[in-house]
Image 1 (spheres, one colour):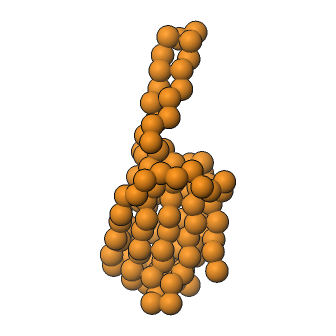
Image 2 (cartoon, rainbow, N blue to C red):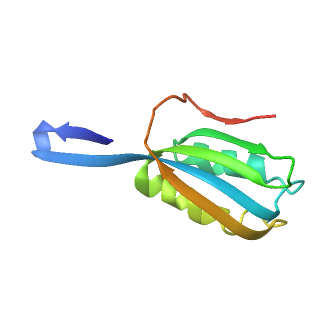
Amino acid sequence: MWLWHSFKYLNLKIVYMLVRAHLLVSGMVQGVMFRESIRKEAELRGLTGWVRNLDNSQVEAVIEGEKDLVNRVVMWCYSGPSYAKVRKVSLEWEDYTGEFESFSILD
């Protein structure tokens, strides 16, 4: 999805590509503040979505927003917070839905 902003007084148009990233993060990623840290990273950039722990010790996240900003959080996930030991990040790009109003930590 594309979002257009027009600034008439500058005769300038800015185009944002809106995306959705679905991530599964493996390794030592539970019990190390991964969910809280990704929430802070997403909120800092004005992104929406959710993050949760899975029973198989992975962390799952869905992040929506402007492509470059989502990419920054995706890249952050490859290292995570300081106590995390990320082994693998699986990423699927999906269609942007705009269904979220904020970024949440799910139970």
